[in-house]
Length: 268
Image (cartoon, rainbow, N blue to C red; front, side, top):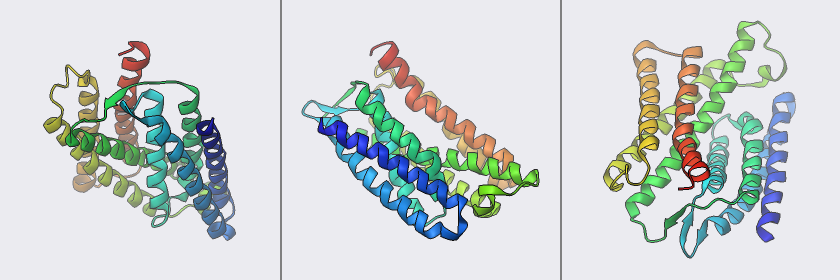
């Protein structure tokens, strides 16, 4: 009962935070006050979400990272990174999408049972692999949302309709620079995740991880190619957006597509 109350409160506060983020874009004269309100509501929601999540995930048998728990945990990590980044970078506008999605993830976690126990005594190396995998996915998820916002901004500017909330966004060059900073950091985390998997996962075939590994490597190649193209050929704009979204979709399939099939369809 307590978990349900905490989760529902977290969901409501996430939605309020998302609303505040949208108001920030609508009214440039009150940007600072709306940003502060967004940060405060998000911080409280993140705390409540974390408390509820810890009670569901951690138990005596081990760590329960079932499908819906994993979605909720990934959403928590995305919000945490978003909150930290918003203190230093102009990313509060991404809260319009991130926070409502996190609210939905909270509700999914409490309304649908999912069990996939990781033993409490697993090797530290595997824990490192899991942590870096989730961090990489979370950061590259934010990058994908940034790419979508950049796509909207680019479309409006090319159509000569830079009105509405578009005029309150940072300059296109700043948005693009921020996108590549996110992708670079996410690529490094994904690289560490893959390397740790090579060293610490004993048999990816026996552990039903072959599809996840193959898709993760493919996503790594996509993001690596994008960064290479940016350095060598100066890729930007729509080319960068397409590569970013392609890499994220592949990564999404790697992290949750295979998990969906194994746990909810094949019951493994």
